[in-house]
Length: 311
Image (cartoon, rainbow, N blue to C red):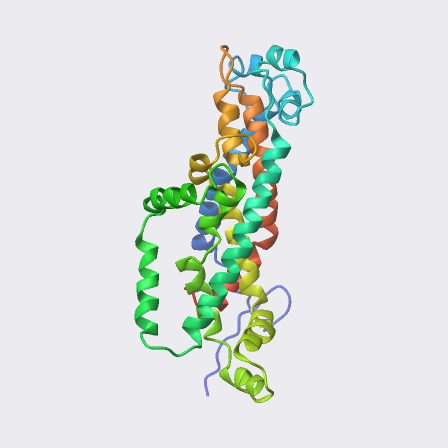
């Protein structure tokens, strides 16, 4: 009988030879591309912070500097109203302070109204499309989903006419009302989850004497906490970042949102040029809550979307 020779290693006779680990060039290329994408994505936020921590007088002279030029917190002081008009003008500002806290409270109120209303009405419509049986249900659901193909700007004019006829121009309710009802994406998102809920659970609840509304409020909604939280987060961020519709409806500081207020602050530029430090400071403060909220909720969003069947 012939025997297979065994490789001899320094560790002892007959010890197996360890195979060399091959370099996974595909993994390296993937991580390199991901790092480049992250740098390109995060660079505007770094440049925003760098500009906010600089002085307007030194920005143009140090335009190529990667670090804050003439480091100071004057931009944040002008945003929070901690500088007088003379100090703001001397620092390159317009001298007219932005009513930051009023705009912030208005944005919180409008985003909360839109989120609560849209999530509730969308959940109700999604449950009707997923569980209730009525003539033409699938047809109307397809027709409703066709609304995804309609650009939002096409609805601004009829919504504006309606809000004007209701006497809600320049009010927070007038800004929030068009977004408080259901949207095609929200209904589709929740319907996918409701269809995965076992029908036997609802039948058992009905046998115990629970009504249809009771099943919806006491069984379906508590079981849907994950997708409801995800939809609430997405709706809140979208409402917080909305600009064009609040710009059309709000005319005074009483109803201006933070995004519109930043635009007004940008328009109040002194003759020497825009107050870039103050504008970037205000933009950073306005974006920071949403960035932190999204950062801590990103995993929940991804898991909920995958569980709801959206692939």
